[in-house]
Image 1 (cartoon, rainbow, N blue to C red):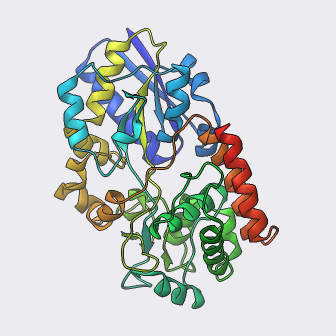
Image 2: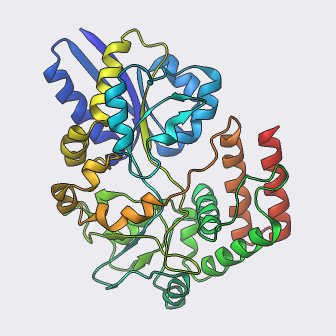
Length: 375
């Protein structure tokens, strides 16, 4: 018996498809067993990949880690192993999902899941999704808006609003963002956070969707939040949510939201690399992605699933309704050191939204954290 261990994150979207696909793979490959463990989303993000690679054969990772991975060498590069299949995965990428795991000329993971902040609404409370920021503010003034603003999501919103306005992020060696541009974005975020229930500062997207999907008294609309198809599927929650493209700021375009999602990676220390690689390519491929992976609760990263009628029917047209946002999503920095910046910068922006730090001091702190991360 060949036994492989995997680590993923603790949510139906992150865990259920890994268990289902591993069972199917084992059934087709007698003598192979793949078991999965899960950790909370934050605990999963906080544990270094170098530690996980020593324990697990397979890992579900997110792309901002690839800079440190490329330097440390604890994952098995997947390029050069199956060129035809790799080319097919690249051609089937939703937006930048596939290339987000390429760094320093190597492919460190294969996209199996993709996400970016998109809009969602309660169809029983709101008929149409706003397309521009002024409409979002009107709804917020009426008490109908709520979205995730814990530190990491506050930072992703800061980046996303800036990129929608075509502001540079992490391009200047001294400034994370130009001071006048950063001040404008912070001002916008402070305005809308002041119009929402304070609990938004304590919730991640899952918390927002749980609130909206399981309670009569809840916001009707969320302009930004990493999408979860689970909440648009019949039977998952009392009030199924409808997902749509994110609103633009000055014009009706969703560009610039921050690409998320996950990929399947293989430990450089696995004793069974051929089997681990074979499973990784299979689960990332078109047939599995639009079939078992999506059917078992996954949120696929392959265009074959996003364009599939069955997958869209299963998820209330989640994929077609948010495709433009995914296709125009921004790929955040991935250099070795970026993750330390992300951890600090989220707290910095969050403190500003809580009213504890002025905008000028917030921007100065962001610049200092950015310079330190590049040192």
